[in-house]
Image (cartoon, rainbow, N blue to C red):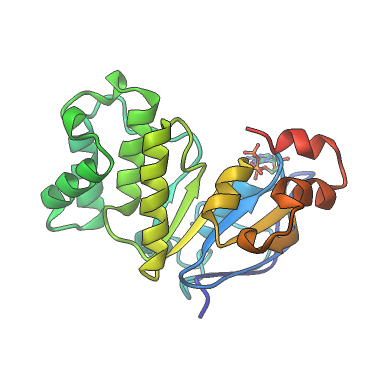
Length: 243
Ligand SMILES: Nc1ncnc2c1ncn2[C@@H]1O[C@H](COP(=O)(O)OP(=O)(O)OP(=O)(O)O)[C@@H](O)[C@H]1O
């Protein structure tokens, strides 16, 4: 059974067709990157896969669960880091992660807070109010909440945004070894080099349709940016792909 499977997935917001018959299959152990220009349907896809939005048409399966029928079961089984999400400003990282531990029923949450704050290097600010943290520190806390219950499937929108180069390297390593252990990662990103260097497979989405899929390691000299531009048949796509 694949980790994620969608067939003819369609989502309309009034007159806007955000997804237009998306067919996607992601096998377990893949580090899959969904790449596309602004408004192409990446966030809508993640929201449907994680039971936060109901599609207009089509079928969805996540770890064998239908997120439309059983959104809570899906949300309990996966880790999610949506775009632009911060820990609550009025809690410290420790309090926030304890809260996540409660919601996720994690018995050894204190040990895991220790483990993840060490891995992501934020032990020193565990007891600082989140409102006083930098963007990058907040991103590290949010990454910790994704993995702290050891889910077998994770969805992350822009995993490396706001992180300094050393922390980016650290997070790349965490994401890669997470998938090498047999887990599955679904990333959404605008950044070509993230997709190219990190992902085992990249899907290019435009206007709610999957245009092509590539193994970034098997690309010829053309590279992903050119593939992206060719698929979108639009020079502006080259600009859109630059960080
Ligand atoms: N709640 C909503 N109501 C109406 N239209 C929406 C809503 N959410 C998204 N859309 C529209 O659906 C389309 C796809 O949006 P979506 O956010 O899924 O794209 P995206 O690829 O994640 O974009 P970005 O890269 O800019 O984050 C866009 O045209 C957007 O304006």
